Amino acid sequence: MMRRLTWLEFAIDLENQNFENYIEFMEENIIKEQSQLEKSYEEYIKNYPPEDHDQIFEYMYEDRFYNIREVFPKIMRTSALISQYAYLEKTLNTISKACERIYNLSISPEDIRHNGVKKYLFYLHRVVGLNINDTEILWQKIYAYNQIRNRFVHSPEEKYTAKEKATFDQKVRGLSFEQNLVKPNIFKLKSIEKEINSDFLELLTQALKIVSDEIKKKDKGLGQQ
Image 1 (cartoon, rainbow, N blue to C red):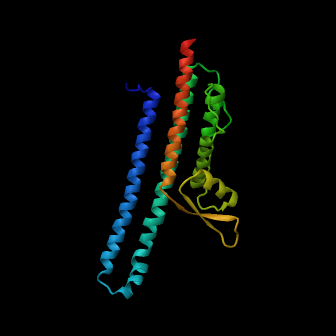
Image 2 (cartoon, rainbow, N blue to C red):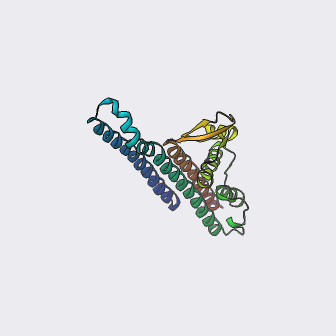
Image 3 (cartoon, one colour):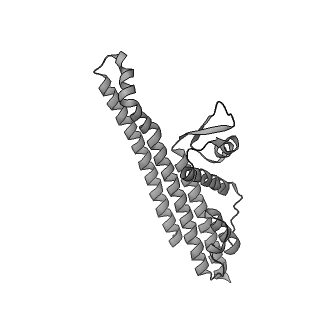
């Protein structure tokens, strides 16, 4: 027997699939562009002796390879993560407002002093009464993704402390850091790999399923009263 989806589950499943498709499409195009550039370079240098290849690469291809391998993937992957986190916040906001209306609550999400995801989780737990413990590792990982997302938005070129690096190494996938040789407590974000978005999408999916399941439990309980 097929499971019936609520309107909330249907909307979440649809948008999650959109993000999954987009991430796959983005990564395929990153590989495609890199492959095409490599073929272009190999085809071009065939007309020149090997001793000229390094000079050709330096003057004609080095910047293009750097952009294709480093700059463009970093921009696309950070943009995808920022979009995913915005979607999570927007969805939790929508759910919170729907709960306020459906359960006729006297407190609204706007009355909560926290910001972003923390605001809505606090509201859903303390005001709506859902069994959500934001100290669990799932939510702590999501908060860590929020920290790196904020860095991408507000201060992408700032250096990272050893403490920040340790947090991100533990809770965020796909980040690679480079240590400052003069100041060993300072690190630079070297690269952002594809795992950052696939991992966050998995966390996002789990988080919204927890909220959706808790709402169904609450509705079932109210229906039995």
